[in-house]
Amino acid sequence: MTATPNVLYLHSHDTGRYVQPYGHAIPTPNIQRLADQGVLFRQAFCAVPACSGSRAALLTGEYAHTNGMLGLAHRGYALKDYSHHLTHPLRAAGYWTALVGEQHISTDPGIIGYDHVVDVDDTHVETIAPAAAEVLRTRPKDRPFFLSIGFFETHRDFFEPSSVRDALYSQPPSNMPDTPETRRDMAAFKASARRLDQGVGSVLDALDLSGAADDTLVILTTDHGLPFPGAKATLTDRGLGVMLIMRGPGGFHGGRVVDAMVTQLDLFPTICDLAEIEHPAWLQGRSLLPLAGRQAEELHDAVFSEITYHATYEPQRSVRTRRWKYIRRFDDDLRPRLANTDDSPTKDLLLEHGWAQRPVAAEQLYDLVFDPGEMANLAADPAHAPVVAMLGERLETWMHETGDPLLDGPVAPLPGSRLNLTDAVSAGEPTVVAGEGVALGS
Image (cartoon, rainbow, N blue to C red; front, side, top):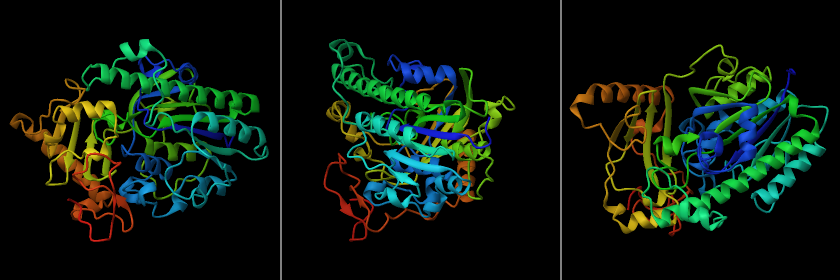
């Protein structure tokens, strides 16, 4: 291993774990090849099941309520301090840093801190993969590099299903009804996942051609779960579970599967350790190297997640252990926040069957051994009151330790940010600007 390995950070939109190495019937041979060569984390979670908050947490090593990304960047949110971005300690250590494609933590990528930002018209695979290959070919050869490559896929709108067979036979997510609408919707996702896989393969081939593959840590992940109801923008495992595959120096090789719970907050300290950089004081994750090197079997006995704003206000926090998932909603209005779910044929089907009239529980408790799909809420069961109390106390302790503003009451939207009212059905409905006499509700 070189003292300062390169880092290639590949990331997608809304993929969850729905790729071939996680056992799904979605042919992604390039991603499978990466898993066969590297280490796949079976229980990896994002810190926020929303695009900007998840990416901000990964790249600062801080929870979203700590780094300031409580909503979406394109709707007005930003980091409190862009110097906490991973690029800054890496540049100080001599790295050359570059951004190609999606980043979603600033409306102006120039303020993030990269040495080089590739100007592209869009962030789909057909544009990003060739641009990334060119950066790998022309990069400075006398310095290690950190290269962030972000693909729009598998965000909606998806591509059309690639075959009639897929449209007829694709299995929808397990929490969704099996209908012609949901099968076709899933087939469209699969078509987008295949395109993502092609992009990943093109970049990995370019890395091989550059001669830097042996000295490069490759990280492949996504921001959060699938853009289907009950996944993205929820604190279930369907929303928080992400693919995480790593290959390269530090023990990330051999086609291994790691079952320890990890969080994307752990990537920043891992890169610091590989690059022999002192951990910045603000980091809230832990290095993955003990898992990669087989010095430890577990890293965390619990992982914490949150969401405050997506399209609209929906303040929730969660704690997950091996056995239990506890979710608390910090809002008296228990109507579903429909605008926080991406529009889709699957969403339309649920709306037709009365989704808008189904209240959300203020507290949720799931036994992940007997109910891994998180469908049977045990929070009101007297037999589970001790578990609810224990996890509730643990959640509040984490919130205090990390300075969560939700402890002081409702979190007002950032002045100037755009949001949907809480009774909106779609994020595509007209938005309001915070600070112009707008209340959190409607």
